[in-house]
Length: 92
Image (tube, rainbow, N blue to C red; front, side):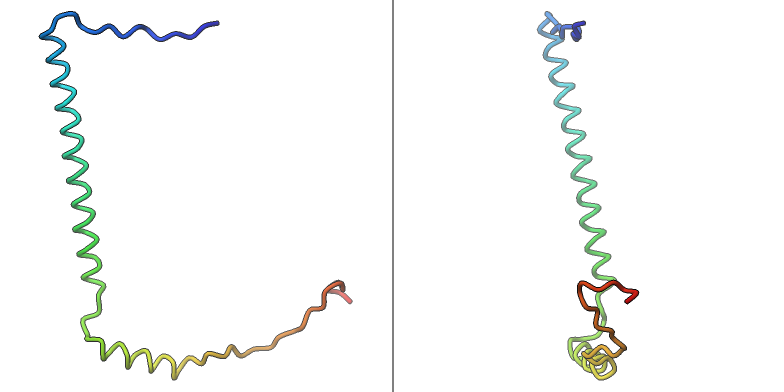
């Protein structure tokens, strides 16, 4: 079984060829403009979102809050640990 697509016949009339070319260019232009609008909306939305999330205090407040967090949260994890030896099963 052979699969074949129908042949693409170009219009013989030069006016129809020019018209189809202009329509194709217009469609590509509309898609390009739409893509640029979507990209600009995403860019502006991202900038606004970052501006809203940004802390309103200066850098001095950030340093003091970081120092306060270190005073409350030590760098050492406390807990009970069990040494597991290799080669032995967990039930032994």
